[in-house]
Image (cartoon, rainbow, N blue to C red; front, side):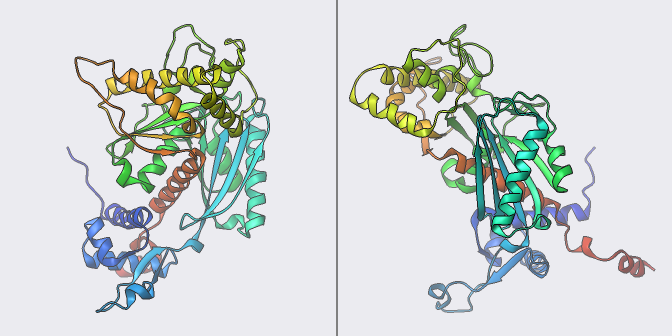
Length: 415
């Protein structure tokens, strides 16, 4: 039996569809919004006029270069940056970062704190986040009253509802209800997402032409992970964020991974693992410090000069990644691959090994890694994914025009 769709749900979804189109494509005319959303011109006009009156959207004439064309210029509609503020938090081993964005997704300011984080407890994590956000608010002139949503992108496993931090190399915490703790502190909605999913989420909004609706976003940094988009949606497990690509086994009983197991892909392809192999350190010991990107630059330069331990470690990392990708595409059809993270600067030493792994045919089917884009700045993508996730949640919560009618007016009209 099919459910009954309420009219107010339809109106709210139509409103969200318009806001989503503006976030994906930028400033648009009402004609363009009609084409992109499939809504009627009158519906688009009613919704956009209501949102403009409430200060959610702005309208303006196009630039002089287009306004001088024949005919009446079409007014462009866009999110009003001054309407609200959202915050993004990024938690990674040795790092706490906060950023504020306006309603148009423009970054207002960002702060980061680098320190040892493994010993942090939930209360101290929240305290650090509060200090960073309040410091940013003072710096940018945004008070707490303008904050409407917080999204946390974290290195680790979160629950599928986006509430709990289940496990993370960032700190020794388990099942931390970080969303509720932040909501209690700031009085606004909050959610948590896996950092790899944040990368993929950002790409679904900001690079839909390159990535399409089906792609894999491989994160290559101190940690190794993957976000998988199928039909435009992030794939996750029924209970957790899932897709722990970096912790698939590459060599059973092999080198120690930060997760505690042996032989994971990350234990050979993570930056800390590459450094460990080059230094000839005990593969059973995980280095606790956080390697900076310039360390990897130095490794790549040495690998270019000679066939030494640097080149061998990078090639081993390529083999681990290639093996994992082949297994992934055995479970799922091959999809376009986007690579992100600091380690992408070393792809010249990894790609031959990745391609060699793909050359191992399955039932005679040859699959080539289809790399459509490379993004060295993965944190930027994480922030994009987190802020757009926060804005989408807030957009969906906005009342539509009819829901704004005062209760007494509704009662009078029914009398």
